[in-house]
Length: 285
Image 1 (cartoon, rainbow, N blue to C red):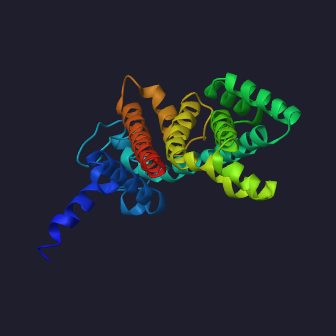
Image 2 (spheres, rainbow, N blue to C red):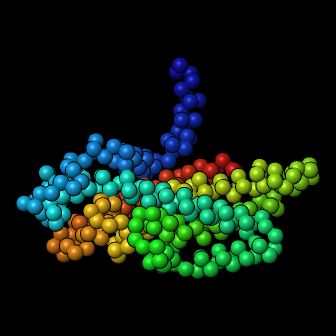
Image 3 (cartoon, rainbow, N blue to C red):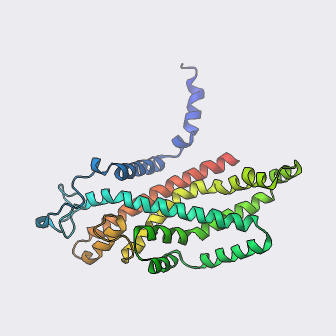
């Protein structure tokens, strides 16, 4: 056993999970905590999300209320825990909408004929010229504020950027040597698209999906902060920010704590996404 140790240790140390350092493990731990909060909030919460205690309203963080209480005496920590499911649902749902639209538009722009591809490219450019929040605001104003509207608005708002990435990947793959070899071997157009072009276009999205979930939650929280999100008494994180605006000078923790939670999730998802991207890039070399 001792003779194998010198040859095993370098392999263990070079493993991506080991070489990534504490940042990745911290991100995984944060994401695991939020996953538990989403699927089993009762295991982490100390109070009910709607339990009123008017005698202890607007109390600062303490041993009995770790993140303080709101204007109705509800425990902010417990409300954040119970709001994780809705917040993650918005992030995942908006990402699914965004990637689906991006795949459709990017694939058409990269594979269709000159006229159709040019038309779709102009649509992508027009959508991309709108700031994400402005485009989401426009959709919310038309459809009305709700959880579904947030998912659709954020998904549509972030789709153009991803569509450009997919289009670029497809155009790059079309001129690659393995596609030329497939054409020379007599493979059908559909087989080339299915076996070569689409997989190479989708590969970068593996890392982007993790990044997009955190970004989508931030955008959705921005909409909720200006009153265009999920209506009270929801404990969705953006709704908590919106509810805390009134007491920002009197009870700053109602804004600061949910904001830090959103930042923590976004940073954890971004760190994981960048690590996945680095692993994929090393695998291609």
